[in-house]
Image: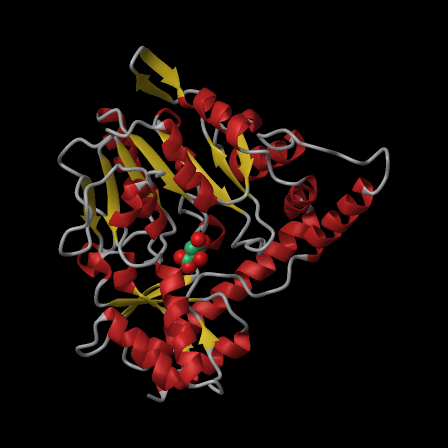
Length: 407
Ligand code: MLT
């Protein structure tokens, strides 16, 4: 009989969001008329920016002509998109990133999991707690952890707790790890890191010859000009960091799918035969296992950098950030303690009274018909917290806040 990957059996319950969907579906069956407002999963709700839409329409028409038709594209992505990204996202901020170091993909979730393909199974790994569950689960699935213990923490991973007591900034480990996942602006807490804090991580990584996997999927939501958007704004980061970026949340591409990963050519790792550059390994991996993102979608992503596209995206980002500030304002007025939501589309709430995270989830679902995300779903140290996403219509956000405020 075929043998399965038994590492999957170590995974706790379901992946968080399907588990929420399961609970919501059973609630809907019991209360079919409930007017549910979903502030759980961070999925965008507002229409695509017209500039991106027009570019995709034009690209599909082009594909309908003999001259404009295209088959397989480059696995790394079309050079015109990589050039636009290098210039607009990095070089304009003074970061040294070459178009060739950018790999276009269909999502940061996939890239941040797939990157493990090129990294040895013996690496010692650090994650924050709470954390975006994909980082942990992909390590579990690939056999890099032991089974889960009492708190749901997996053996072999180093968990770095983040909470109100340390302003949601993990303490730099006093032991050596090889791989560190960092996400800023942070999902789920909405916290941000300043340059000095990131410099401390880069210094640690360089001292310990570690690799930082830096998830910057929410960088567009940063409001303070002094805060770094990219790890490459930090001195030395090219020697120790890979960065993940996405068009999902800023340009509303969660249903379109386009993201990218930056692997500087300076980045090296240790192989059994000596040092190798990670860029070549990832290039090899992508060329073998991935056929690239569609031409049409890449044209849509490119249009995000036209002057109309930039203005439309900025309007979208501002819209969601106004939602976040309404959530912060109304929940604070209702007596709740709130964090995040100032440079990120997530508000991280201390659960009131004796509610644990799932109790509060069930309470809001039942009494306000509002769906959020229990903090404990992001890790043991997320217990006692609850996440609300700012991705929804203004009407729904206002309605949800009124309902919660009147409980
Ligand atoms: C979330 O709600 O945390 C996000 O939707 C996760 C993701 O982008 O995959």
